[in-house]
Length: 312
Image (cartoon, rainbow, N blue to C red; front, side):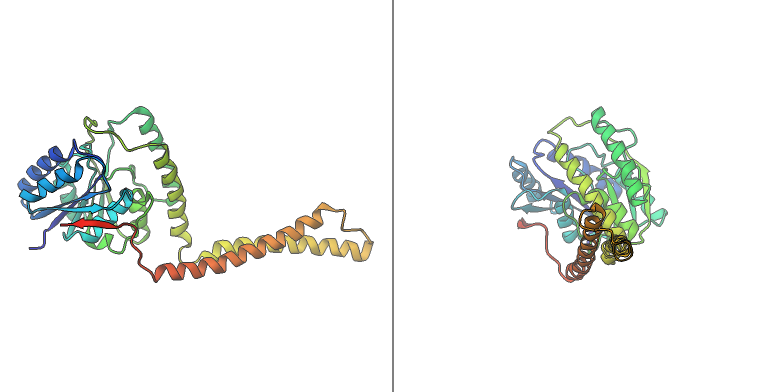
């Protein structure tokens, strides 16, 4: 039978957390009464994570494992999970035991009763270091301003999706944080519910300044993609047109002064600026044409952002 639920859990060096997480999940999902699968995605772990997962798989047919050849990141792990999940409802969560599996039944009921396509967890009472909470709060406000969506906690991995919403979803970098924004842009209905957040008692956090930087850059990509993915010529060509017209009219005024008032142009900085504006405007216009071509190529290709070593 096709399982009704697919639980996707990216794993990277979480050997201490895997067994207690599996046992807790197994208990919760068994009581919930729906058929399910648990899909662990080993994102190139260098500890004993894979061997522990293999042992769990050997005695529980509901557990499936994807093993990456290298560390491709959490977004790639999410993408692999989405590509191979068989459930009608997809649940994603972290593998560090900070997300509470007991929230899953409540979130699924909320998804169904509210006719949502996605329900996001909101770690309203977070158990993280003060600095991490502060940075996350600032990032969430900036993200909401950039993307126009009102989810309080874009960094919470605990989410529930209907299968249709995650089909053909391209993820790379740190884009897993912005899945709600992408789906909202595509017209799906997004809900949010307060979930329990627990202290990290086992393993080490993977959060650092590099992920923060990558997340910010990916936010700019998402914002651009939402507004201009189908029409990159509008931003590049429009910018080029404005700059080119300013340069043209400046140059036209200078030529008028030269012809009718015999004012020399070569020693005037405004002359060089006008020429520069025309050149830069032309380049932006050319960028717009090239970007439009690249977007068409992108929409016609389907390259994977991960490589699987084993899948069973």
